[in-house]
Length: 405
Ligand SMILES: [Zn+2]
Image (cartoon, rainbow, N blue to C red; front, side):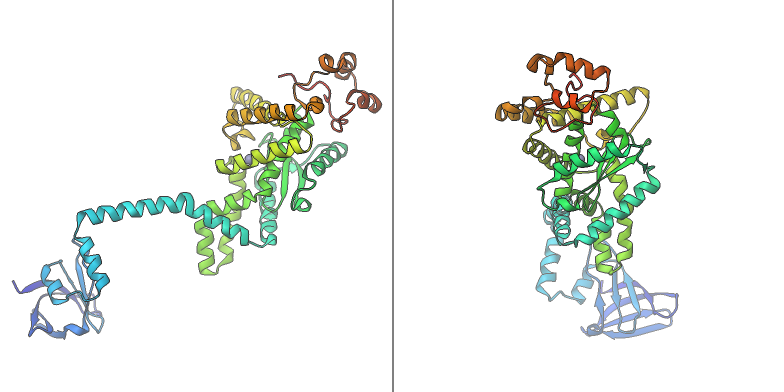
């Protein structure tokens, strides 16, 4: 067999010519069909590489094309000269090499997905100007206010000021503390929650403030959110989740398409797509910060338990997404916080009143005052007596006898 059947497209009309193709005088390809003949020097032709049993295409210099089934003759007419092409061709003929390449591709894709994208996202986050992150945070807050049902807080000014003062104490001395601000929002549809937005803003819902019975639980939750802020988790997670969009925007030079990223952030903040690594980092930061500020890290466990109790109550009465839905593995986290709390108690025996299980009556003989506190609003002077040695909770409802465990 010296000729092959092919379909010829002249590149000008859609008509197909059935032709026979053969080598003529060793250096010319001769095409013959009904009332059609054409000779073309091999050097003017280019052939598509062989790939499995896919049809081969021979392109002619004037844009015409030949389409023909793969056949060893084609490789004889167009021998490979490039060493790389020869090597690739040899690999393609070996089933083991093909299987190995598929495996390498799959492993590379997995590596890219699990390590490559996070690594590259973090490098981009490091290089990103601060203003971009701040702007992203503002956009996200606007989206949350508009679409997620966040309304102005109903907490009175005095309560807000008290919590802002605690937040200021908590963030004091942290790098970039001046960029960390606390905002209050009423969010009946979201429930008790706290969110760390890109750029330093932490949003806490009225529902979370009302749920807890001791402000140190709020401190614990806010310390965790500050952990997210310190590590720029919101920006990094956004980049990780939207890496393809960001890369496409960078290559296309089309910054506007990157704005699609903004839409994705409120969703992941509310539904919780922070990686486990980020959650652990924020937890570790919170436990460390609480201890440094003289508050037992066990308050973090207490806050988790309060939220857990709320969630199970809601589960009985219906579905309610909240803080824990965006922060899984609660059990594990509670245990870690308890452990840190025990360590804190050993290292700081003098701060025994900072434990969530501090019993004022048993340990300090303040039984009467504690009971009185539950019944009537005490005068400021009384509170100061009750909580001697403490800075916190002069404005909370149950500072001395917090919720029993
Ligand atoms: Zn978190």
